[in-house]
Length: 232
Image 1 (cartoon, helix red, strand yellow):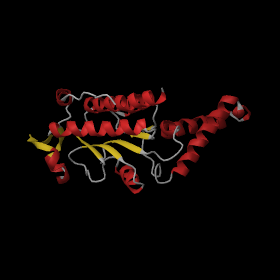
Image 2 (cartoon, rainbow, N blue to C red; image 1 turned 45 degrees about the vertical axis):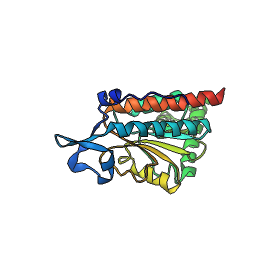
Image 3 (cartoon, one colour; image 1 turned 180 degrees about the horizontal axis):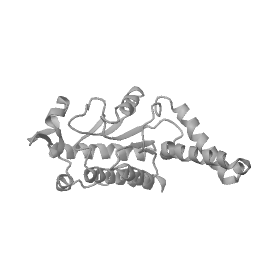
Image 4 (cartoon, rainbow, N blue to C red; image 1 turned 180 degrees about the vertical axis):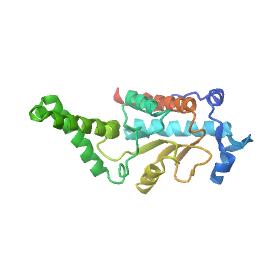
């Protein structure tokens, strides 16, 4: 992987240095903090930068080895960007809601994905033409519902090898599932999060859409670069 330049200035401009209110912090995040300002913790971005580089190197190495990387980010301000980056580099993603069992009970998830694909195929081939108007409406709604929750992971044929998580506190259920299966987690951890189960923590603001967009673009470049090389 060629070196991806990470700018402290860009991180600062994007608001990556702002944590949560000091009263909402997790003491385990202390080592990543510079101080506080007006009741809000401030991240030490000179510590964040090398951790981003380490996370990107791991993701690039995983992509080069053909491992399945799944991006998880369900926050309203970033969900479209999650889909955009994941689809661009051809990896699965979850941007609606983490469904319990996606990792720990993948067999059940796969059955739901297969059901969705079968219904879409039946719709395309006219199989449902013999159904009543009301029945077809219900089928259409079910396909939309399934696509909403499973569309991003329909390419998964097995449990992902790596999880990239935006807001590890919000997505704690996914982090726990990954930890139980010993799946490495790369995660954006804010000042209120627990970094213990995050293998490659990125300590920074997990709310600012500009900061998250910046990181997602870096992640997309790291993964895309290696996938392109692998496919040549």
